[in-house]
Length: 216
Length: 265
Ligand SMILES: Nc1ncnc2c1ncn2[C@@H]1O[C@H](COP(=O)(O)OP(=O)(O)OP(=O)(O)O)[C@@H](O)[C@H]1O
Ligand SMILES: [Mg+2]
Image 1 (tube, each protein chain N blue to C red):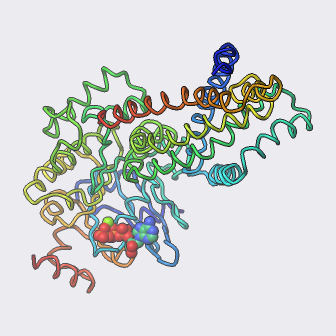
Image 2: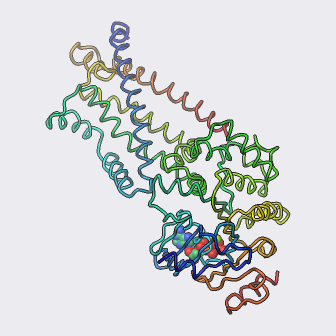
């Protein structure tokens, strides 16, 4: 246990970095995934095609490969940014495909008559979606969306491994390989760090689930 | 050209002078297919301001589709549909604006399940007409009074009976001050004792001069409120006549056989 107590500072800052990656990626992928779901159900064929292409591409590509493209592919074509930015962006792009599909299934669970009624009073497609369909889709969407987001929190470890540095995962790697601490206690510390993110997330999720179930 | 066609075709059969008024809904050579199924075949139909047209016909004859094409919930493949002189635009902001001028009442009510009755009625005026919340609310309250359900304003749709929900749906459409209202079998999903409360509201609207297209098999309503009955079969308009003529003396065989079936119960 010395490995943990002696390096509390390192673990703490690793935890904060990981938490930051998770939160940015969550906000980004929820937003992008919602927009993509809107594309996939829109009456405009090119938008639908774009949404389908996005989901097909990124849902079927391993996260590590997506991150490779961001971290090494983009600089190669002259787009430069920090590893942190590339890492979070890669995670957002990858996760948005799953978010999109979770939200789309929720949209499909709302009866078509709701959107038709919305459109026939003159709401635009975007208004029908945001004012009528999505609020009703929310109830069915929260549980699957929660799973997607928690999976993403864990995937953030892959981003760390890719050289963002300073996050929980790479802190663990540094402590074991560079500073010679024993594997098991360090990895236990890392695991505790991730659980400190995912367990509260699960609890918050349940609260949200209960809230949206009542408000109706 | 379309105008000429429409004029020759659709002089309203009632004699209250509607004939001089410009057409409000013009359907010219409208054709629609679902895959191989020819749902609407060369439909020519013109409805003038203030007219009440009842559409009647066997199941699957294309009545709902006809209604849904008028506000482009269903696109057509051939022909032309114009509302108040404007051809239905492609999907987009213009279409949304045009739809706000065409009210629609569905068989299954389709009230917004997550909104209160009052919010159902104010949503369109606030979001589409950019009315202030106060103004929208006071107008909505007046409309709910007009359809007889002002006391239910704060409830959710699921807490209302079918007849009440349908009257809210009518109020929701009216709140947009539509030029024409489409009703697709508005009483078919209702228990018998609720049918009349909805038909009464619709009869009053007809008296108030609202232009209406009503798909219904309620002959009492057709006789009371309609200027014209349009009989459809197999995607065609087979017959057009005043309610009196149509029900007492249909000319086509198909209308005769259809009427003999629905008159027996
Ligand atoms: N979205 C659709 N896709 C494929 N076929 C459809 C669709 N909507 C309707 N149809 C078919 O088109 C035909 C006409 O349907 P429509 O709903 O307009 O008939 P209707 O006269 O309203 O009948 P009903 O009295 O049963 O409501 C039917 O054969 C129906 O099965
Ligand atoms: Mg129908």
